[in-house]
Image (cartoon, rainbow, N blue to C red):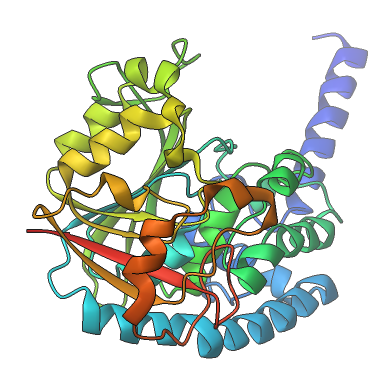
Length: 363
């Protein structure tokens, strides 16, 4: 080999080794659970290649900020929701489906902690599987601040603001819903064991992503995790259009049907199920669900056929917020005349005296 070529290769090799030595760990050395805990401001396992990041000032500030915010959220919302759920959702199914959810695993878990399979869906992109070892040196602090900003509305008001998320989930190095799902899982005390990008064929069969997606096919992720009880559970999130023209051919509803009897959760759904353009999802939920838990932005009460459903209202129906003023339901107002109060906020009417939940149970 020519001397100058050998020298060039040697220089390149040394530079590569130095670059690897500067990273907290080689790509693939850190587990999904390690990554989730770092993003959530929680110490990873002691032997994690990411453990060194916890000594950085930016991460310590992130951990303090998130710790205080979660402590407040737990006292104000989540602990109260779990008490309400245990008292009122007495026959939970193994599957819960949360349409128009975005990455809101936080409230799915709080209301339905006994589910074995969670299916979330929305228009928000999945993004790449987070790998903190691949971040540019010095960028972590900014990415963590971006995550805190992205989660601000759901932690303060119980819902994501869609127009804000469109920009937030596409900027920075940690993009899409996956970093936020990681944070919610870690902060909810879950341990992640596996993360796989998936899609669906038109028959609703789950497939691993091996290349470009077929036109109209949902982009998804499958996360296997366990809670403190050690039981294996599965979380799916699909980025997919649920309007009538798109959902007919995406395979998403067939996938949901394959999961059997399920509990459905709908909140802060922009009153889309009031529209004729979302009739297929509305009809599917009414035909296939065992239980529907929703705020007033879900399925209009007139679609719950008397005799087929028992309707149990909680809280106070104050009507839609101003931008959805045309979605007021006089029939729903009558249902809520003698509703018992709830002591947590939920949906667009997140203040305690305005929040409402309707629990519809199939007879």
